[in-house]
Image (cartoon, rainbow, N blue to C red; front, side, top):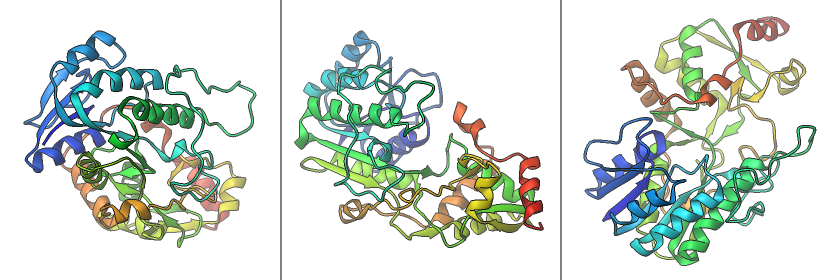
Length: 343
């Protein structure tokens, strides 16, 4: 099996490339060479997806049995469209890694693959969907961009040759966003730890390696597919997650649980200041049954936590990304909320 990974040097792209090598596949990776390093054994092709000449040069290295697109998160749909059109003659299938943000109902409603996908033309530029500064409604900009990119892949390769994967939160070794690393660091620091919401709240993060394996399964699949790629509903709880962080770090911390309304009253930012905490009804109600039936397997979240801690403890460093700085509550603000709880 010969595959092309668009990306291939950090987090999900690197996990896809490594998993493909582990299967004995021949792997090429197309990237700019500016961040991260592809696994040993990968043939790297340098270029920029926004430059048409680079895309033509990339296509000349084909053919491939499949393309796995892991690097389109910051590209306009029209750039995904140009790349897919260039690769269509030299690739059998296209696996596009999208996101649950592409659904109109995210994160306010429970989701399935039957849920409505946002509007977003395949040829949209990077400004499509931007909202005015005084807009106070839902911000669908990112979701519209990703929905347009999905359509770009489908229009180029045809429905029967494309698998669209829509993950939610992806965690694991190599994470660059900073959600799990922040919780691990906070657990290691010990003391009284502000824990958000209901301890029994179900959460659905998925390990990056499980997403990678499923993407490769789809590279071999027949027919067109769209899947939500999350852990099953009820797979883990916030309490189980935070206690796993305490256990692997050896921290002597004590979790102090704060109800949602108290955190909201104190202006704690959902999703970022206390990562993974979100009160929206659909945040952790994503039906991934279809993917599970197609072979998606999700390891225990405690294993993801332990392996990420081992990666960090052994000197692993994430690729620098601005989202890292968004995550984590300040010590002062945490102490203020804990004081209200008698902590």
